[in-house]
Amino acid sequence: MFAIVQTIGWPIWPLIFASVVALALIIERSAALRRSRVLPANLLQDVLALHSRRQINADVMARLERSSLLGFVLAAGLRSEREPREIAAGTIEVAGARAAHEMSRYLTLLGSVGSIAPLLGLLGTVVGMIEIFASQQNGSSPQQLAQGISVALYSTAFGIIVAVPSVLAYRHFRTRVDDFLVEMEQQSQQLVEALYNEGSNVLRRSEG
Image (cartoon, rainbow, N blue to C red):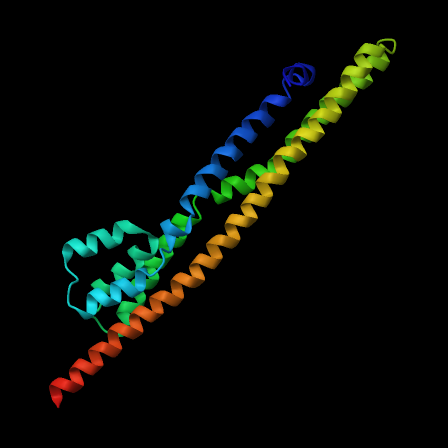
């Protein structure tokens, strides 16, 4: 591997940097976008159970907000339950937008690495072609010709090797974020329906 790096020369270093960045982003997003950190199982049911027993207090709200992104959105809805339904829905929408931003963090950079890596490989290819033409002008040195061909081919290969996993990871994470947002919206709507239906039932009982 070190011999290949030596053969390619300086054009390989931007690709190595891009590969390190891509790997770090893939690891970070894999950890950040785990379902347990975004949409824990049964969280909505637990929140509704606590609410029905009138056990929602400041400490519970603080822990709910810190528990996950879904918890952050549900807490926003609970804080607005005494407001008109439209205001509560708007508050949840704002919290959902913040959660979406948090889930999408670094994905643009990862996609950019996947798009730039082939261009960096193309740069190495151009450098290799320049060396090939230089070898022809200097009397067709076989060693310089082989060097130019190696730089061109290795650079192209490394560019593709970096780009393919980066693009696949970007699309995978993008799809996961979209799926999480749909589920989060559904659960937030269930929370609103439960809170305001419960409030309507309490009001009817008090009037009766």
